Image (cartoon, rainbow, N blue to C red; front, side, top):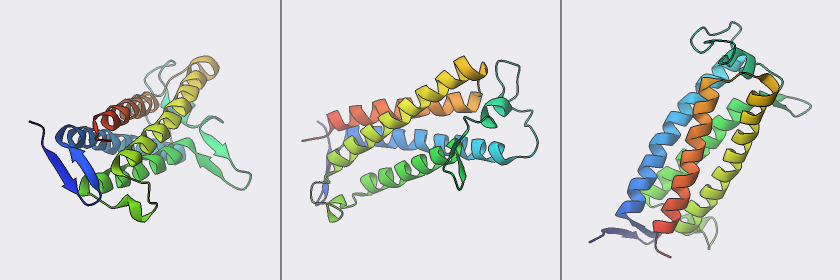
Length: 170
């Protein structure tokens, strides 16, 4: 028999809670990866750690013109945007696992609705990751192992968010 944790703010069954914990673990790993990529972006010297060959070179990828978004007044590293996304995701996940009342923000924000929103935000992250993989493959002709790791993590998180939403009570 499936155990449900019911609060005044919504219901998460045992399977949903386990999935959210797995997504949290993936999010912590992704946060660390994006923090390291941000460090590499600003580091004055190349890291020997992830510059393995001509085909796997973080320095080329992480310092290319595709590694940041130029807002005109500031260049924001893509890795820093990833860090912000993963940090936001972890805050929301903590809120879900602790039973925060998201309805205080908007009356329709049930736990299931929040999970669905996070799933679709993760789809955007996955699509952006696919674009970056295209750039690595067909423009730069080299890959960053940490970028690829981040791309796999956001994809896994996306899938798990959708699975979690499906497992949650309507």
